[in-house]
Length: 241
Image 1: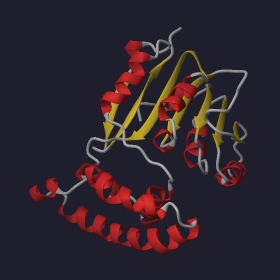
Image 2: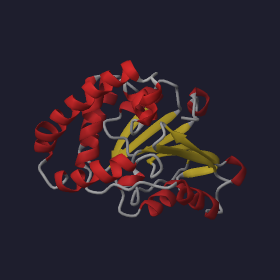
Image 3: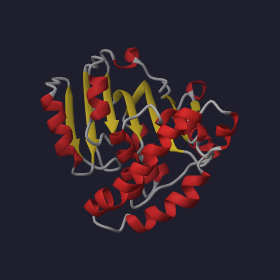
């Protein structure tokens, strides 16, 4: 992402939708003054354990909803990875997140893109609409595990043919170039995450451009939208001083 160690060093940071805090624990080692992660789900218990096990004195986990979370202080940096596309009202979530950024502070988001995701939208998402109604354990072990096994073997095969000219016609070509570097556990996580969500949206770039342009609190010269792995968007900017 367009954020590096310098964006965290000595700063106050808020992660919206921290999950099990795997990313939070990583960036906490970049020495922010304080980093707070919030999540609505039961994953906060695992997040707290991970923070405690790694003895991160500058990191804290809270259980809260993005839209109802309140803070008396604003942050130098607010980031939200893979959350907006699961919200009932994603644009509301976007604007709610900006309220936590101090003037001159930065914000960063990552969401599923509509562009480059036709295979997922037309083949995977219909399965999600059925699977997401099942118990989580059945999704994880009865559906995600066998699908992830097939995906992993295809990923390994793709790594051997990715430099062939015909490989460029494989759906999600850029995404698979990235995925082939990951282990089986990551493949399983990707499949489970796709199937367990009750709601998933895929955002066209134009929609994100409108969100950013229409919010007058944003410094227009700071705006960026970057296509990631050919099927998702990372975008952000800064709040006006």
